[in-house]
Length: 345
Image 1 (cartoon, one colour):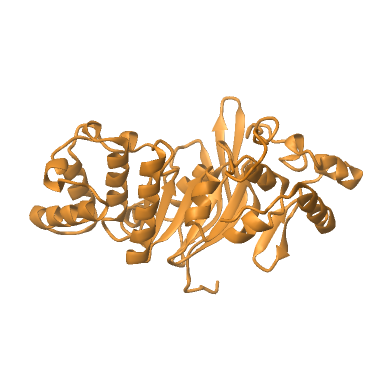
Image 2 (cartoon, helix red, strand yellow; image 1 turned 90 degrees about the horizontal axis):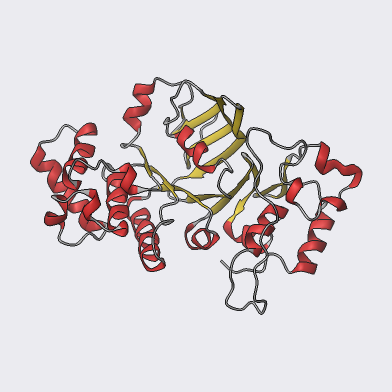
């Protein structure tokens, strides 16, 4: 395999399945992507699209007996799928780290903030308590925690949601990882704190050169932070492109639906255009295109292909891929008539 030195993470044909009493859950299906050093890839989609599970697989956090992972995950050129769990654990928190959706659940309720961060340092570095504590003070200061010495002696429940999220970011970055996976890092926060957290991630990325995989359903966050976007639906990648192309020239009806559901200050209409229906069950994915049951354009495709044939993820430009049976001409006509893809990131 030829290794591109600019690529920190490469995921190839990743599949994740869970065996349950009801059957096999096809959580991630043949997903591939690359993350460049110092850049941000946003993975977007509704709940149940497979975006969080794919990243848990990358981090080696799916270890239960009922999960099956196939495909390849290369981090700095080293294959992680099937690797020694202890070797992956050494990488986790040191060279790659993750910010979880709910910091109150991710932080241990019985230990102070300071104790947890000191432990995060000492797990990967042979340093004295005093040295580790100095590093913790420095990182908490970087992420904007006021009265650091006082906060270090507090427990997670004594901090606000925004403060806890900052602590999680500090914990993730304290060992200088090359890759950071942020799973819905602003979901439970008000808009003011959300903006502060995004600014913080941007500043820290600039300072440390960290690559970021941002998992979110919020396209406003994507426009603000991402360089590339991977759109997932029903466990599959349905579109992948630079962020400007996703906003200006989206090629897949599901992406169109996501864009149409964004409130716009300039919009004259009073109502948004939600995507009809609900996401598919990963236990029983539809035959053909996974989005077909909710797609308003499937009748324009010849031979009812949307209901019978799973579309390939094909290149529509040098850096843009989409999974759709509509022809390029049909997509361009629909986008023009419905004024899709004119949002400015």
